[in-house]
Length: 98
Image 1: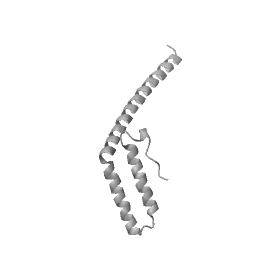
Image 2: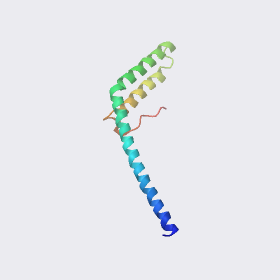
Image 3: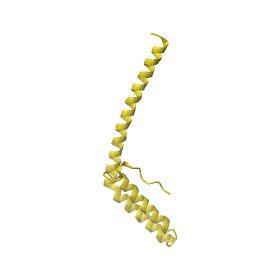
Image 4: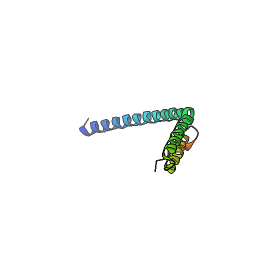
């Protein structure tokens, strides 16, 4: 067996291992998505409620001067939680803050 044959064998082994790692990563990503969706389903309303309560407090303390910002925070929170809930968002990422 020549040096090129050994190099070919090593490269094939590395390719097989990379494929296995990729498959495992895909499985773990799927499990993570399911867990996050379950948490969003169970606690999403608590999250949005807490954020709304916080933004209402900020609005009261600032006299509504930054209501456009706090409304945007409320909207983005609801969209993000909605995207994470199972059956919604089609697997899309939560919206980016602008």
